Length: 232
Image 1 (tube, rainbow, N blue to C red):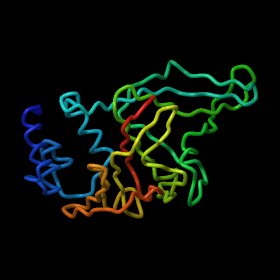
Image 2: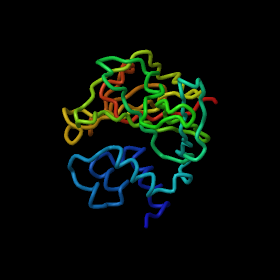
Image 3: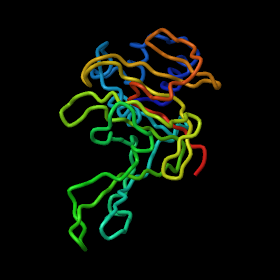
Image 4: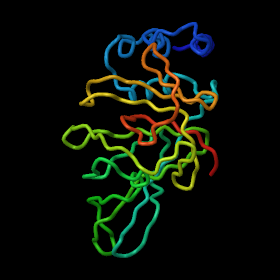
């Protein structure tokens, strides 16, 4: 069982730079578990999911919870509705790239309704749907699924993305940090992150911290996107 007081001390040591070994940080945050304590490639989203389940997030004022449900539409009947039966609280909002999305797509296209195998009960026309996300607390974590059905990596970049004003389902966010995955397959490669600290972007690459002149609005290689809610 993780002691929140011990975690607070360890996190403060990390914040002050007293603990700056990436392996040591992984050991602290994962409580020396076998899965994440070793110096080998692990999935960043799996680590994040393990971390937030392990910690008492309210203790740190992180408040990561997103309420999701299905938004469904029948183009033939020209009706759209929400499916209240699928309400759920999640820690990660997964976004899937449209089929044959190409090299560059509009960021907003990630939130368009997609064709499904379900049919309308009124006309038997194929329905479209997507997951709608409502943040009632403070942060939203988005995971871009950068692998297609064949397991191939999707290298698509985005256009029309502003890190200071990200509009999702009538909510306005700003980017706090991102986790990038560099590699040709989803099972190998290297992770780096970009962090906004005091309105300055920094790149974290293992023990190397580099000050950046700007943020890459194309979200190249971005796997996890951490957003802070500004307004509903």
